[in-house]
Image (tube, rainbow over all chains, first blue to last red; front, top):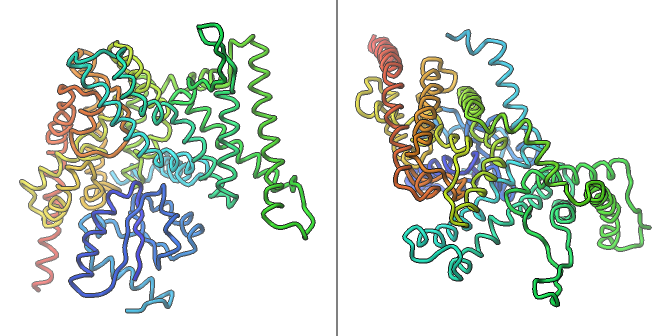
Length: 104
Length: 434
């Protein structure tokens, strides 16, 4: 699965990115993931299945949806804060399931 | 306390923050400013390399070696507005589903024609003539013009396209040709308007006034209110209030402030480059709201949580938050404690930066802290931004002030909240046990 993480500057999402990568490695499923800031996320959006936003830019959801034509979701604040990767992957799965693009 | 978040003012503030953040022009500006981060950092790198030896008296700012080392700064920060105007044209056009590159170039041309029209000058030797672009308004001083022209040129082109004021080619013409022609009219209109305004202004005032000066002058009226110590307190309050809704308030405030901040720091850079001490500007205080662990100076709170949290939630969050906090990233705190929609924690979250700012201001006023002259504008680990901006060891105490104030101000609120949470957790456990 391919996930694009977006927050204001790409800093706090990059912390989460590392945790998600590690989780995927441990569980042994394929994951392509990058973290970008608002200034350049749109250069990458097209290659990803789903775009996840940091809660601090939740108000950008509609705009990013319109732009990228991809499923966009805001990560639950508490999961984001403590890096509860399991819940976040559950969130991704349910989005992909809804869009019938779940492969794993 | 929950009534506070439901009050009319807070509702309005939340709407306002969201609207502003979603405004396409505003987004384009903030996106473009963030896009210049690398240019600014590289400029700062060369500025520091060139300036540090002068602090030790190894060479003066008049020496050739200084000039050589300083040139990369002049070609990055020194002409920052050139990059900004292009990026704004590019990003704004993109968000309006127009051709980004074309609009970026149109914005750049219009900016150059207003801010640095080519002129032929004769050098002091009396014989050599040269055609030059004066770079005086291409750096931070020209930022307001760059922002204005970047947005307005795209708006004009957008208007032309909507009203179908473009040159239409017969279908047999290859598309790359017809596209080139379709770009002509908006560019022409834009140049006529901007060059017209610039030239008229110049002629009417006998060359005393130009558009960059006029715009800076007009904007200086509302901005001079922000560019004061009380103004900075209000901006800080505003930014923190927005964060209590989970909106990135620092970014919103930053877009309003950054042009002034950059101008002030660039003025200090020029002062240092000519051997004078840097001056204090109120905008320097903005750094105080996020000097110790991110906006709200939450590092103190995280330390409290690590040391004495009783509740599982605060223990977990503090553990997750400490390392990012050392890099001035505090989303784990904002969303994990959480700060947002949490009146108990919102109070110290707003008070801590305000008190830190006051103390930092006193530090500047008595001359202990040194004004910054290196533009950094980037997220740096704890202590780095304060030191690199001013090259003064004294400024290492700014984050320390932030941490100490944080420890004291957050403490009582942390205790109350931690106790509440621990009781709640215990109740849930007890229920499970039954």
